[in-house]
Amino acid sequence: MLIRRPADVLPSEITPREVYLNRRQWMAGAAGLALSAALPLGLEAAPLSAAKSPFSTDEKKTSREDVTSYNNYYEFGTGKEDPAAHAGTLKTAPWTVNVDGMVGKPASFAVEELIKSSALEERIYRMRCVEGWSMVIPWVGFPLADLIKRVEPLGSAKYVAFETAYRPEEMSGVQSMFPVLDWPYVEGLRLDEAMNPLAILAVGLYGETLPNQNGAPIRLVVPWKYGFKGIKSITRISFVEKQPETSWNRQAPGEYGFYANVNPSVDHPRWSQATERRIGEGGLFVKRRPTLMFNGYADQVASLYTGMDLRKFY
Image 1 (cartoon, one colour):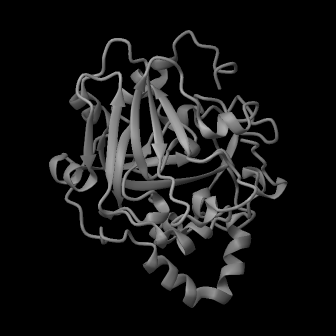
Image 2 (spheres, helix red, strand yellow):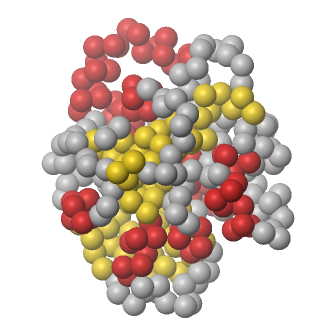
């Protein structure tokens, strides 16, 4: 398939929050309706019982409004406000995640049952986008390792591949004649990365089930990596021997590596990653903060990359 990407949808060129907020003022009423419509259909927003996690940061949380209205989810459009406006069309219940590949116990899991059977935790994580902005988000979820142990990976399994839903009739952003990406969206982790306690499958935020625009009903969260690794609306998890393709690496391999670890010393080819702007802190001219190695989670994950050239494996 010939992949074409218009120049005006590159991640670096998407409308900054401070600009798009002004644009949204005239449609404030419609925005409220859009946010309501974007709640999971059939899996209404409801409280989730979750224990407090010791992995949580004590930093100030980003506002719920920003977290649920300033999103990257290209299946519903390339603008930051597009997911909140359009993702309500995605039917998220019933929803099944199929787990296959090199495992002893392949299975299909209903998300509703995963929620009921899992020991959910609230994980307040720093999240860093490759575009240079960051948030602090209170996810609700469970360790990815818990699901992995249930399916018993074989010794030959070295990587975990993820695939998101592909529903053109429900996803307005995938209907274009000139697609931004080759759908469906795919991502992957090394098996040891996937087993790290920080990696979670999130089913909620702010104590309630995930809104559609944030990846309902289940998504990956790996807080030491850039945000594009956090694949949304997962339908398939496969255990494989070789490094799987990932969507942005396939689209622009010189700009988006497989690992995507937050590393302030390795710049994106078109902009620096040394600093970031925290969403919700001041206006357009607010002072940027230094980017932390591994997004501040070096103590928990640096050992995964001992001896690796992190400029080569970016």
